[in-house]
Image (cartoon, rainbow, N blue to C red; front, side, top):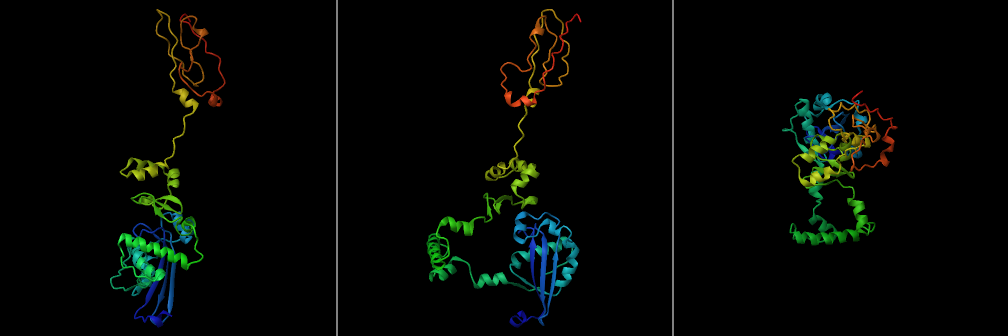
Length: 340
């Protein structure tokens, strides 16, 4: 097929990758497939599924349907690097957007594996670049297609806005099945698109979930980080990040648990009963085993009839909501006089 349209003087390998994300420098290949076309028309295929050595973000799995479980028993790129390099040896390379993504990520994988992969003598064929060059997707092309008009004021803001208005009207006229409401157009074409949540792009909305877009946690949702690594959220709030970034992070900061009645009562100081004139120092108070047990210290005669309250006057507490935490009342400790 291809050899009849494009004579080859050496093999051409068309390849594609599936990866953990869209950053060629940080993300890893989890699947690679190659089709080698020889000058005589023969074809060879080479394919491997790989363990990237890092979690596959849910957003990526939703696209290529490859999960952590699918790659659990697979080899790493380093294990297949030499064999893949041999398959590609002496070949030109082709694919769709290989110059923008697949080839950069492949070169970095070879570099990590310590396997030489030189492209200086290889020729590249990128089908996407051909497509974009011959079927442009800019406003001038849309004006010709939908309006039959030349857009002579391209890249002037007002001229572009006015032409876009005409293009939108042309699209609605051409496609009778298009929704006729802004809400439905939004839902059909724009809802759920990945988009930056802050001006710096630190967080992105991916598949409707606020997601980390930098560092080793790239691709993890803030909801997940809040549960599994709240220290990351606190680090952002204390770090050198912009106010919008911190405002987003603060929404996912786990709340500290509320103190119980026992916690509060344990922090309340207990007043000592007044001592009669001439009495010596009071003996040490007994060890408190429960915040609900009254503590009776050595006191003046008559003080036994009015034991000291464990809660000072003026302290307000919601006792009714904490009744279950209060143990059964204990009999008061005997009051010892100094003679005893």
